[in-house]
Image 1 (cartoon, one colour):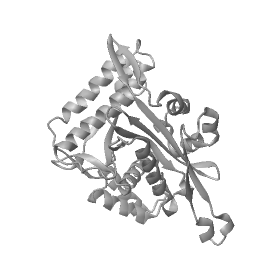
Image 2 (cartoon, rainbow, N blue to C red):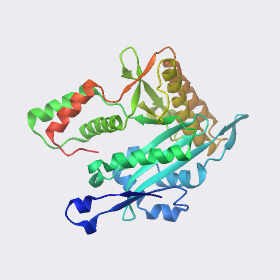
Image 3 (cartoon, rainbow, N blue to C red):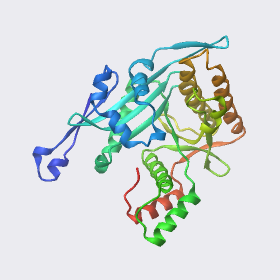
Length: 331
């Protein structure tokens, strides 16, 4: 457990209401399912992320308390022996014992990368730099837990700059304050990118135009008919944050790191754990997922990769225009 002192109550004129926050992490502070659920973290998770972005709560409980606990797991697919070793941790920021923030990370021992699955803070608690401080504290704790890690990688939903510009143009022209669902999605993606930028993340970009490289995530539900897998794929940009004090990533190292990150996320963390649940019945899924990853790597094989800030000049201008509208953000 890590204690964070906060003086909000005192600043507001009532010293008796100054709050103390703490951060607890599985499995050190929360060793069983009841303790984990009683924090309210799964309710917060449902509040922070729309249904299409959420994993099943029971799966999260299983990952952080029993499956991904730093032990090597082995299985066979088509006579080929495979293994992987993951360590998933859920960090919970609490106020008066109740969850107001969460961070779900997975360390892949093979690549020495930390994958950020989810991170968020309840809307009412985002002011005053608390969200950023929570994130920094989690990274410090992760560095202590996994001293060999070289940094954190996360998936980012791409946003369409032209589409966002059209949305903001329309809002500026009409004065409308309500956003349609698809408009909210676009703005939400921009706001998330802006937050990752503040935290110091960079995108893996094609050096020719400095646009983020796209990678394609396999379908995450092997139980679907194979004919439905392609339709359930998603495109993402990958963002990177080197461990504090690590050498800068430049030139050929950026391309090597890109490949390492793609394999870590989509083979070591996702495909292997999904196939391990039922290796006899999921050989076709293994072949499909690994072939898709190979295609992603092949497309970028001859690309010069560079790291660049998540929010470029065009994105910053869109963000400034959105903020001037002073509309309650959909995030």
